[in-house]
Image (cartoon, rainbow, N blue to C red):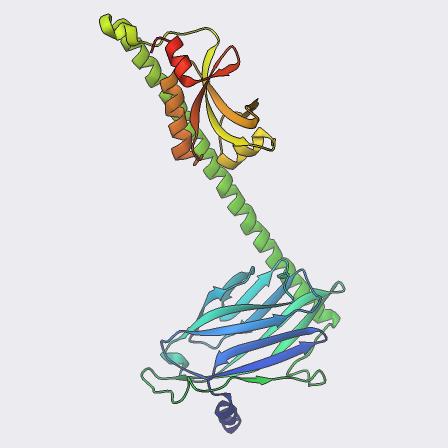
Length: 338
């Protein structure tokens, strides 16, 4: 057995690529032939999926002492547990041929010749199919070991014929194997869905917190503006001439967007997590979207700053109206004696 492994290593050099065929499905793995303890290396897997889509899982089993982390999961959910590397897809990537990769670091307990083996499972014609990957052999050398001519080696590709024995590359669709694989994929699918739901819930809660903060900021701005106006109006003298008077039909709002094509205001409310309803109006050939209603410019300005800082609305600004007709802010301030 040892002689067989050593012979394989002599022909492997830097990396060895193995192929597994199952009708129109092919998986190739690329790994270095020899690495040092403590040095990270990459395992690259190329999948030629043919015409399959939907659920799929690629799994490799690592010997003890090898630790894996994701590199390029390519749309899959990556996990490493109980020395098993798993890539799980709810739906395979659209490209016929695509790659995934992960990185491995070996500790001192892994010194010696190590074997990586795995499989690729997928759904086809409503049945679970499974391709067994040929075994990859890698030599783990002690730290500080010189690996001669490693960088100059040429990768080799080994094609496994469709008629190869079931121990190298086969597709198993027996009822017991299909049932087990289907159950595992279904279980993994449920786990991914649960994780997605939890993430959506967290995002919803975060949006709610931001909306509540924006509403508190708006009310605080109105209160500060009202207090300022009250202080100015009661101070007498020159201050009274600068106070803003309440004018019937005069309001200030905050514009958050303008488009050439009309869209629903609810889109901006959802996009920026706004607490106020977003109202539409047409002005000077544009569809404009505004929020809030204030009788005081300072309150409107404070609210504009709040949605800019807290809701990340790009460039909001104060607008003004008299009896529903849009006027300039300068005209509104002049009417209020400012």
